[in-house]
Image 1 (tube, rainbow, N blue to C red):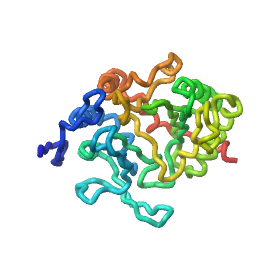
Image 2: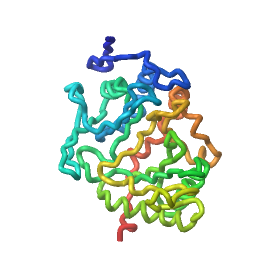
Image 3: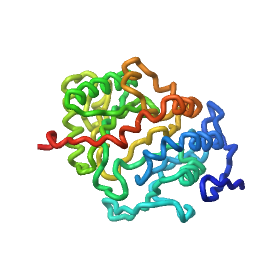
Length: 295
């Protein structure tokens, strides 16, 4: 069983030849190598945030499971956060603050990392709002792209800045960074307002209807992602799909030009980051007020 020194700690690596993406031949070793290469870019977006993992120990077509609670065998140095659920159950989340922790998670075949929208120091106060454009049956990325660009115009008119990323599948997310002073309810009011404007403006392609059977042919505008304990795929996290795609931050210019999400995968992403840097960095540094939408 190989052990590596990542930063200051030993991390055990296991089953490195296990094929995680059979269509592409990408192994766990390839996955861990990818996470090591992108660690300077993904870690700032995970720091101090409780995280949930989707693990694929037998590859993307094998049995997977969603892990909230840290396993009993987790290393003692791994940061954590305890939260009481709605059912009065204590959940002990992992918090990925450094490269050691990231490589440990990758070795668990945690292909997807889903961080909270808030930090462990202020779990009820999100520091960004998320607009999630989720294409339903008979819709695709192009529909989500058009709606995200429409949201960009609304945000511009409102004096707000948003940052877009692909979901790694067919969808898109737009983050609006905030002053960390608003509750999740405040953020839902804010995002719900803009989503309903989009729904009324584009009734043929956008919906906020919660009933799945009534969404066909439209993109679901999921502003209810803005709830304490809800998570969303981290920027630069891979997805369990053919081609090993990655949730990739993109510029608005790229969206205007018709960028395609399949361009971004675990093989192409490191070079993109070396060339462009983290185009999502503003999510962590911008601080914006939304008071006028809460009156």
